[in-house]
Length: 223
Image 1 (cartoon, rainbow, N blue to C red):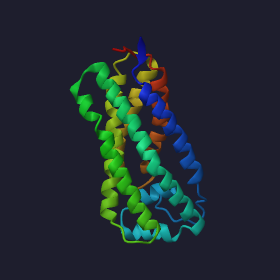
Image 2: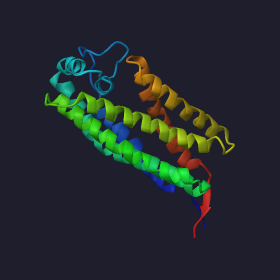
Image 3: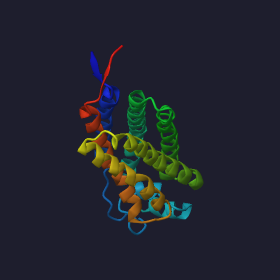
């Protein structure tokens, strides 16, 4: 009997989509009156990419109590989302290892767990900042970039496999993943709209990757 090698990823992918939509709805805020650095328009991303405690404080004090509560609620849901999307990436990378038997993918499958820890650490610092408690801007910055660049590396690794399959959809998806790492490195040294372009790219890549896991056509014989 043949089985979709990406079946676990496909099922997890549904949870990724549902939780992300839930988080976007609950965490949606009115940005009017919220101070953000030039080029940044999404409050949660402005907080994640804050360069200093002074900048963070300026953003936080400009957020109304209602918007603050919404951002906190969205970040709480993100604690569930980070488990779902990293399990999804783990299953995808693990499946590629089963297909290719390339040892590098066996080790790359561990990368999502690093991203998971970094995302959780980032969220904790954001919770503290939004509650006006003591937080570490240094830890926030490190966690943020480990998360985003870890995501970029994970998608790039998947893209390396997709480019070999020969299908048009796979090649387009692969080329999209190749953009993430250089764009992420650029975003590290920027502090403007490029940070949001980089982050938003993953909101496009995740549903495209979920679609791939459902319709890849790659089958393995069950032993």
